[in-house]
Every structure is written in structure tokens, then in C-alpha cells.
Length: 62
Image 1 (cartoon, rainbow, N blue to C red):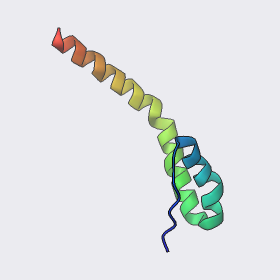
Image 2 (cartoon, rainbow, N blue to C red):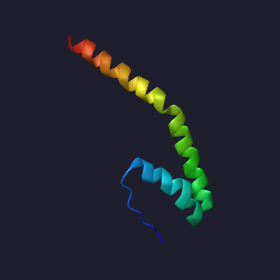
Image 3 (cartoon, rainbow, N blue to C red):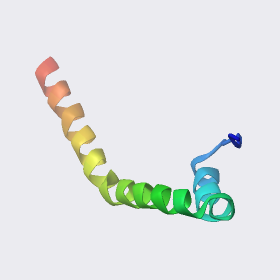
């Protein structure tokens, strides 16, 4: 059985993972939590890389 839950915002995704998924499937919830934590730890790096790329592209256009 596949459970379909409408997800509208990022905060609702995190709520689904942190609260609802734990009640449905604890093992899956732990795996998803690990992925979200890793993503959260790395997002500032990706943001910096995107900013660097943006300015490099602007510099090449000039």
C-alpha cells in the first residue's frame, strides 16, 4: 500500500518526516531523517557554489 500525502511546503515535508512518518514506518523515517540532516549540513556549501558560479558567468559576459 502506497500512502499519498499532499505536500505543499518544505515545512510540511519536515513535519511529515519528523512526526507522521515515525508513526507509519520508523525505519524509513530514520533513513529520511539522515538524508535531511546531511542536506541541511551541506546546503550552505551549495549556496556558496551557486553564488560563485553566478558571478563567474556575469564576469564572462562582460
